[in-house]
Length: 117
Image 1 (spheres, rainbow, N blue to C red):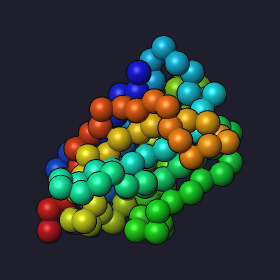
Image 2: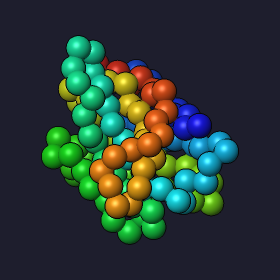
Image 3: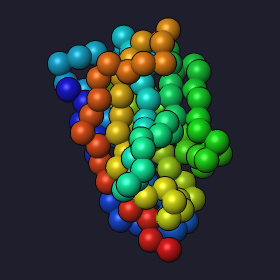
């Protein structure tokens, strides 16, 4: 089970750090990703980190502002979000999958991030 936390209501330009913790499943076996879904829009990719943490990938819209990281000892993945914009408003979900595939097998329920202008 993946459980996200850290969402909230912030103003444009603020920062938030999202966390995704796993129970009953060691995350060090998986690549981890963050996705988001805004109201009325399709889910979109945000960031990904491989099993070792040595490789990351970002959507163009967040590159330079967001940072994904992981702490395998704490079984947790993070998303540091800086310089937030109203367009970043969405439900943010974490997911776990294989290092060798773009597919994700396990998903959290999401945490709401709202950025006011």
